[in-house]
Image (cartoon, rainbow, N blue to C red; front, side, top):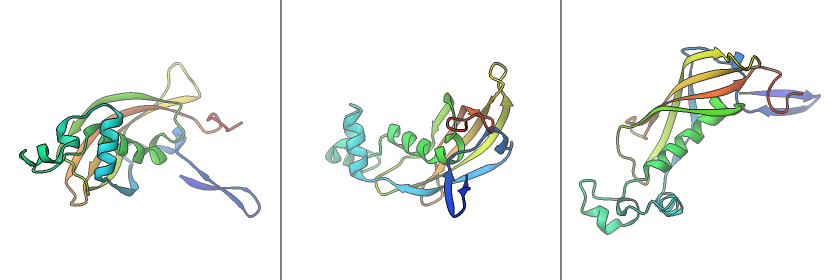
Length: 167
């Protein structure tokens, strides 16, 4: 990410990265963090028709081993993925998919999530000479440094001069 001078005394935030700006082994820390609330959890759960009582029935959840509502894992994935966009896929043509998503610890309302992505693989597309594939490992942590999730994702990213709006 960078700020680009578009004319004297006028600057534009450049969102995302071009293929040439990635390097295998580089780690991007995604900030700011995001504190999840009960309202986020219940709204997301009901909006997506996942009304499992562990997400939206506090009396039910109180009887569980956790003693309180769990944040819907779909919400956790969506928030963590969103946190990565500015650094990893802001210029991407397409999200190509995930190899795996691992939920490694529970997330509760009031937890603040932080994430980082490491570039695992980088290659030019065989069929699209102006684009390439970036594969990252993203890890998410709560405010106590406990890893709550990780996933491997690939996206199709343009080379400099070939992104949407570059012409």
